[in-house]
Image 1 (spheres, rainbow, N blue to C red):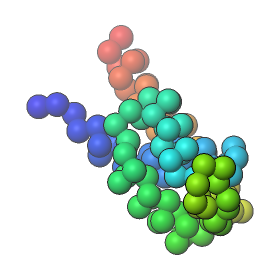
Image 2 (spheres, one colour):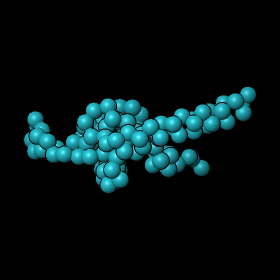
Image 3 (tube, rainbow, N blue to C red):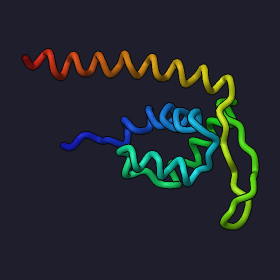
Image 4 (cartoon, one colour):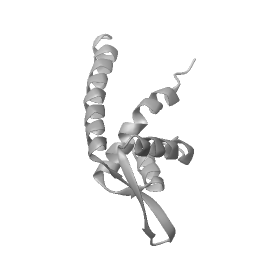
Length: 110
């Protein structure tokens, strides 16, 4: 049996998307491309857009339609104060989780 990577991704993508948006106001396709460049090569638009909608509904990001140099307006996303707090909490939890997994998978073996 092979480990189901998709289950692990579902729990981390929101935090990763928030991190990208915290760096600059951006739009969905650009977020997807940035994720792919950083190792999330199996990510699709069908995965990203529902997460963006959920983050917007929970108040972690806001959106606005802005002109695009290449055609119709694009929906750009900006992190909110609530989103910054959520991201901070995610980063703290992720750091602890990584440390625990590394401890078990590296130190226990030795």
